[in-house]
Amino acid sequence: MGDFNLALVIVAIVVCVLVFIFNLYLLVNYQHPDDKNQAYFPKFVVVLGLSVAVISILMLPADVANRQACRHAIYNGACNLTLPMKDLWLAIYIIDSILVFFVIPFAMFYYEGDQDKTVGKRMKSALLWVIVTAIVCGLLLGILYGLIGKVDFTVRHLESSTAAFPSNFGFSSSEPCVGNGARECSAYTASPSSETTWTMRSTFPEYVVALTTIAGSVLFSIFGGVGIACLPLGLIVSFIRRPRAVITRSQYIKEATELGKKARELKKAADALHQEQKNGSKGRKWRKNVKAVEKELLLLEDDMNALEEMYPQGEKAEATWAMTILGYLAKLVLGVFGLIVSIAWVAHIVIYLLIDPPLSPFLNEVFIKLDDAWGLLGTAAFAFFCFYLLLAVIAGEMMLGLRLVFITIHPMKWGATLMNSFLFNVGLILLSSISVIQFCSTAFAYYAQATAAQEIFSHTLQSLRGIKYLYKYNVFQIAFVALAGLTFVYYMVFGWRKKKPSGRFQLSS
Image (cartoon, rainbow, N blue to C red; front, side, top):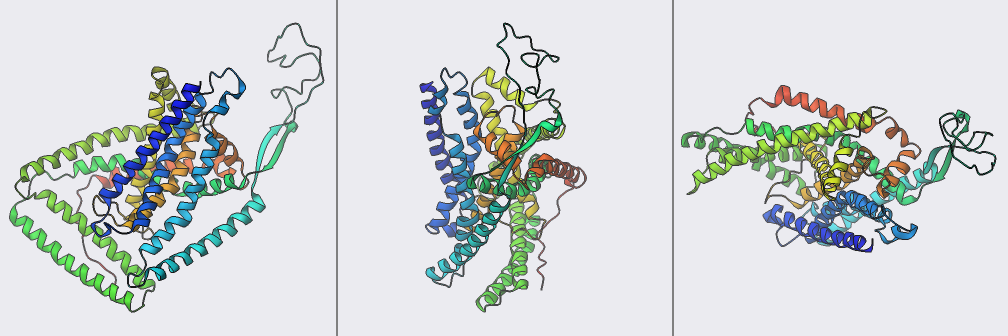
């Protein structure tokens, strides 16, 4: 037992170090050249936020492994030697909430502040926004916790008279209790009037986690539902729309000239907006035009990348073209594999969560059988499905961000990602990761039973006043499946059409 627990601690430490190194690698390779050797605080927040998000996803498989350490315990105190998972869950999600609602907004306000101002003024302005946010969030949390921060558990009140210890036990549906007296001890035969509500106040950390989970669940049901379909189908559609042959030089010059003209118009508009910012005219119209410029710049970059892809240049043009073709083949393979995983996810939600009683444990049984085959195989598959759900959320946000006017576009590009885009996406990942864990602990309740995560997310969270009905009637799961179906229909109707050039400059005057 001691060896198993020690190994679990060592694995946890090694995984945390590897996660930190991997996130540092992502930052270095994704960052924009303009941010090199500067913006150290936003970079620290990005690495910390990504590490917390990834570790929170990995904690659920660790929770399952931690539970297995007690499975063959000889004495009751053996589980005290395992990891304190409930305390770790609360700590990781309190840190998550602080990062999402305070630290990341401060870093974004500071980074996006007027570059002409001094560092002190930019920090003062960012701190002022964060203080206002903190006061509003603190008041809201305090009022809600004081009024409805209680948990209502439905229980049965059972009682029975004493009886002599029998010489044999003959239990059956007709004789569910010991002795021939009153049978109020049996929940099977007890009257409905024996049901009562046991009310207790939840702890404040658990309440913060619960409200943060609700905020994340709204984003999760929207972005995750769209992303679970668009993630694999987008890869497959990308293969279908791939360039079939290299264009001629004359075609390349014609298209490049047109893109250059659009780029000059875009630069002229950006300079005009920058001048308006200096003059202090930053009204609603100015913000609308800034978003329009950002969107057109993103579309123009996509068109430029597509043009360079169709006409590779340099001494290794043929090798570049061959790698392009192999890249699209890889997208097809990953898309088909992802489609299978997405269908399995949606089928599992319908079979296990939306139908009462569940038709089958489905993926829960798959993970258990994989564990029987090899101890860590089921846990690894379990972790993969949780990670895939988080990737689906990110894919859904990227898709909707180009189509919904109220979402700021912050694309992640290799070697060209500014820190404000990094911070925005890290905040989204952190907020969604809470809901992903809650969703996975519910969807795989049979596999992850008796874990600390289930105690927090399945028992306390789903019994809180004002919140429990969202889970009782499966509001988020239904929205997730419905949006996944609508996205699938969208791709079937419009997704296969050939993509037209998108970089048309249409800035509102």
